[in-house]
Length: 203
Image 1 (tube, rainbow, N blue to C red):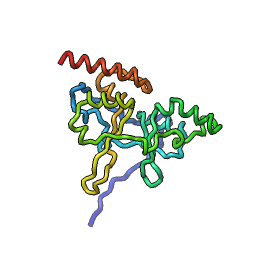
Image 2 (cartoon, one colour):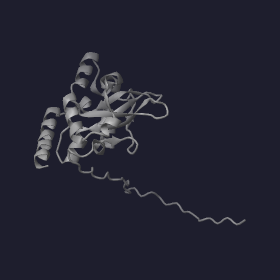
Image 3 (cartoon, rainbow, N blue to C red):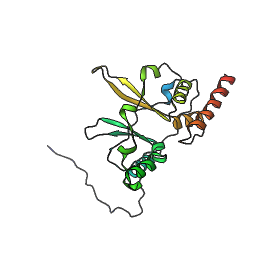
Image 4 (cartoon, one colour):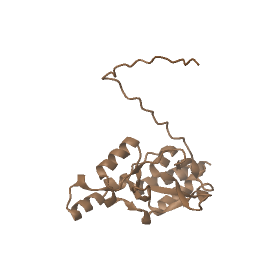
């Protein structure tokens, strides 16, 4: 039996060869009256970005910058969720407090020292999200004072809840066409409320 092959040649890698990167597509535009699921980052379709609790907060920041996200899920060595860490945590008062209390330099602070522990994390049920509108999520996040909120789903086989997705106030703002800076919760919600009111008046 004859086997046909194609001869392959190797080439030297040019020193100035750029790395091809996939440019993320712009977020789909939405209105406050659209289904909330359209503004959710769905972990069934988008890779969940995670980090070790023993990583430094500088490493966490670099990972966020590289992945273009503002929240990381903290996992232990067995893949169990320990908590989450956001850009607000990294740029806020927590690192300063830990540095002063523990008497360690900023570059030695670990993710586990400033993350939000799993016991303090709340989430929405995806069944409720499927019935809600984007304005409902905005109001709920405003009332909770949150920049990010997780979404969970009950697994049909095991009956246990699994992490399904997340909402980001910054992402919602981009999809609504509103410029929102991370960490400015009050200002962000005030801006979003103006959008919501405008949409309601013109509807």
